[in-house]
Length: 228
Image (cartoon, rainbow, N blue to C red; front, top):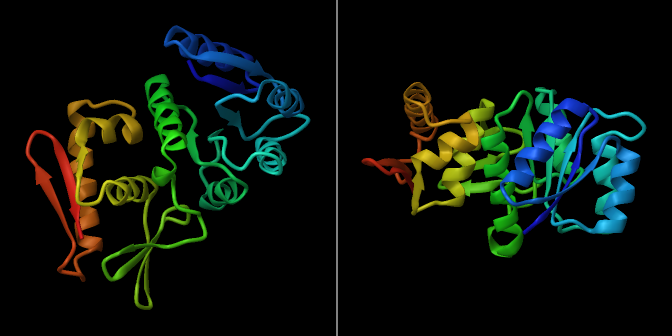
């Protein structure tokens, strides 16, 4: 089973996450600060890193910056209480692959870990470099900056709008399963979250309406498909 290097200075949260991952079959190495985490990385060479951003001795950003000097491929998931777009962008620019805002559900954490591990095993499915815009018809989409651009017009998306559009793009011309999206972005697939997802799909259609070649279609009972 994959080995997870978990670096979290909140002891109670760290132990809960560690135990939950181990119950699901992961091997977990747990560090409580950045210095200890960097030393474990050098000794263990895990399959994925889950690191808090705000930690004593060495913060998560600095830790990953150091790791990326020797390993550009290992998946990194940031845990953060920060919600500012600038912080998120910085995390991606320093080498993070994904991030999860606190508080989070353990189910969502596990879904994201599994998704990153799958991408690491299949290189062509890895997320595009953060400096590149993704072409969606006539639009250019920058996921980390949550920005959608058409000609000189720029729209700033919300976090969930950007995450949803990124997943639709990655699965473009294929079905994106509704249940997977709800677990990865909302944390559960309850009825109310399902209605919220419908609202966000409507918003994305409105954002993309200037290009008639783009469609987001409902696949009844399954999910959605971005057709370009």
